[in-house]
Length: 375
Image 1 (cartoon, rainbow, N blue to C red):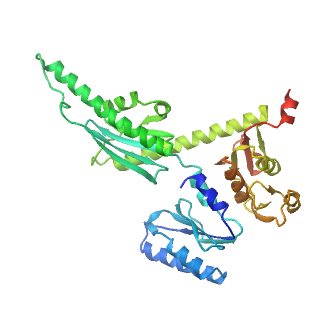
Image 2: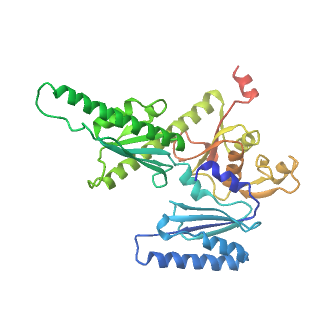
Image 3: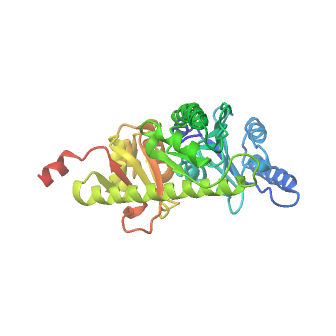
């Protein structure tokens, strides 16, 4: 799942049931524990008068305890349909059931906003295993490239044929690299890769990299390791995760620096609930920043159109909404952001560059009044 896929959930007919249940695999009787957790959840849903049709649908969508650290499932009480069921990395302190006008998506949002689509290519001089990921666990596609092996073994010694054999080996390596590169490019385009991670034979990786077209050539990075059953795969996987983590940290820092710069000089940014809400109403938000310091109990009011939102019932009623509803600030803002094509990013609240009031936004344009004031 990608962030944009949440828009169909947020605009579906509510109210909604959201279930966030932990799952552990590395414990004794993990399957029995997961089964017991779901029995307790289904009992709570029944106590809260959730229809049997919805309970059965959620139970069928529970997945396995081995799917991830936790599972998030969302169902519509209006239709009885399960709209979303995804493994998530955030395990709740206690299993949670939410029933409300909007789905509770923070656990999934944490995963999706740190998601880095990437491609990993394990090479040797006879081919490559190329895998595309939406994150470090979710495989989007896998292709094995089997290059030709003729003339790949370099000969020793001299003689009149020595250079000819060497030349043939180099040519075959390059031909294999071309096929690998085409596969890498195809998968990178499919997932919108932010990174291409090369692992394996250094010479073959050099040939693959040197022919990559922009922007993929600038997204290339190599980590040590080999291809095949050499025992290095767990270490390679950790190195790839480290590369992805560093990329997320660098991207977050860059976003905060942009936010601080635009807020301080160009006024193409704003923070605080009032100003961000106003910007969302105008579809002005390019990237919505939600910080770890945002008040989890804060709410906003909203109407059927995601862009009709405000900090009070009266404010939304003045926009022509007959029956404004109140919902969690996070979900209301997220709904408006995705409906207007904005990006969303969770950021830490500790840095000086972080938004005040828990929320902020980098804007698509500055208001005319701000531009006039600067002029």
